[in-house]
Image (cartoon, rainbow, N blue to C red; front, side, top):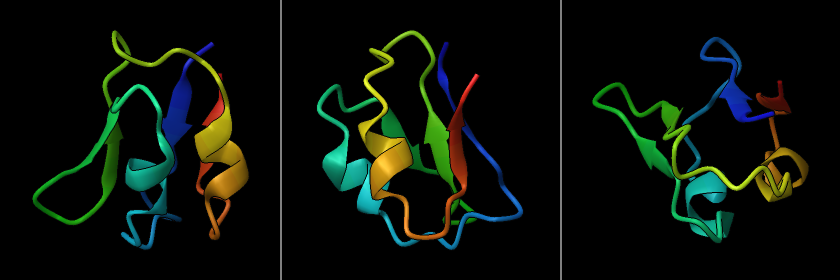
Length: 58
């Protein structure tokens, strides 16, 4: 399982970027979170910290 960002729900707040211990999440040019699947450790911290519930584990 890896973290998946629902682009339509992401508000670009950056909380997930700050909270990811693996530094696997960054913001793209549209200010939407993007997950590096190879770096993701599947910890789920981003899912819990996302205020817009735009992240799930799949």
